[in-house]
Image 1: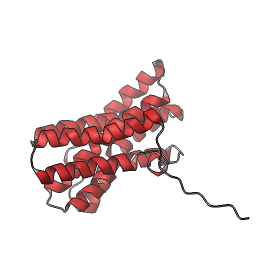
Image 2: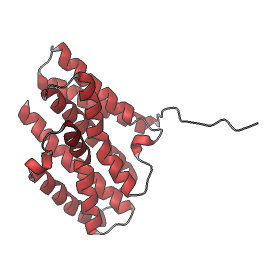
Image 3: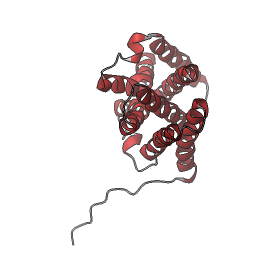
Image 4: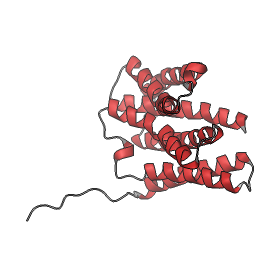
Length: 206
């Protein structure tokens, strides 16, 4: 189980770093800007989670996380210079990163002995705040705050993991896989069929 979470963590770092570079490419940033965005996107959610929980920040304890994010940033920067990368790919990659990080964050907090409610909140934060920082640095409205089904997908995946873990009827690996699929499935369905949440509207004065 620990090995599975470790590899999922590395995959999530690479995916979110890639989304950072894609966002940088659409804003025509240079190499330095792209790598910074890659690292911030890949580590932002987990960093905030660890600070709030008062545990060692994961990439300070194991610096290879940061090296993977930076290396992915450099490789992706040169890759997108020669390949046409649609904005849709950014959304799909972000969905994959969201699914992986939400589940990893939730499981890590459960392993620390916190309550399911805290685990869900921290899991959602882990999955969404890297992308939120990325979007803010790019001058965009964060996906987390748009009408798209985004936070709902993260919340559903975190809740699914907590519920399945509490039932204790499946192996840990299956629980993680199912929770990832719940998050990813809801987010991709929202992208495919343009599903959205109700938006705040002020009724015009008569």
